[in-house]
Length: 177
Length: 177
Image (cartoon, rainbow over all chains, first blue to last red; front, side, top):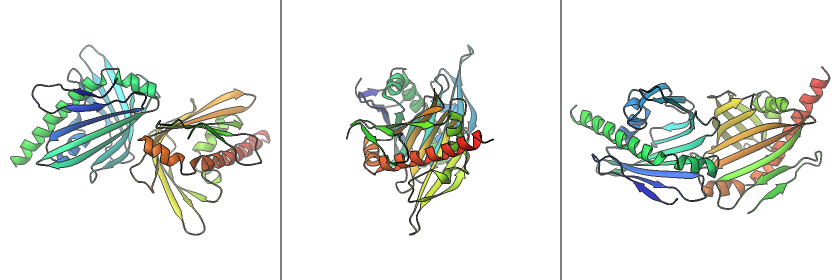
């Protein structure tokens, strides 16, 4: 396993770039969005928008709980028409629009007690573009490897494609105001 | 930096054993307490007891906030008579007496945005003894190294000595009931 780029979605030129170093607890992913950071932050913190982008396209997403503020909790469900459902939950350590930064815990309920700490920072690049850097640290290297080998990159890249589409929609709505 | 044992406090034979591997994000510490796991868990989750053991002896400890349940938040302050104060806070991802296990975030407010994920498990060893294993993962190896070089081990070992004293007090009270 080494550094790897993943590109999904013909509709966008952007790529989600992963860094997965051997023997580390970390996964880092960087993505550039066409839109200012406040719109990307809004897409990430508005419970109404989560079902439009969170998770792979093959699943619907339901927001069971989302208190997008420091000290709040979240729980999302991914499901398909065959009746498969996957729950995910965590707590927000920090949600700061001024960063913008979100620091939260993440647990897939299929593997209870295995938790990652996720730090997501947004940076305005100028020209209306925003760089997102999301760094996840797992409790063990084994947990990190398990996540990296679960097809997570493809799922995350697709999630970022969908997030880019939501941001494009917010940007269009903003320009038409 | 390598594996290291730290012993503080002549009053106890127990040791806090640290594992700090070079190049890792993790710090692991193990300590055996004389008392059953339910009493150790009580000492860790009762806001009334925190000031009796949390932090080095040279500081007083004030509980600003402690919702010791999954999804709750905590904030403690360490201070001294010279007016120095240090705030610490985080969120509880999981507090489960049945584990017993606590998974929480940890931030020293002197270094905002630098957060650790802490997993604390208790295991009854029989003979009225409990093993505590606390594993902290930091966002970066640099943050881990910074914590490891801050005198954290001595502070943690002293904190564990104090926790052992609180557990001894709870055990005595239980036997006298």
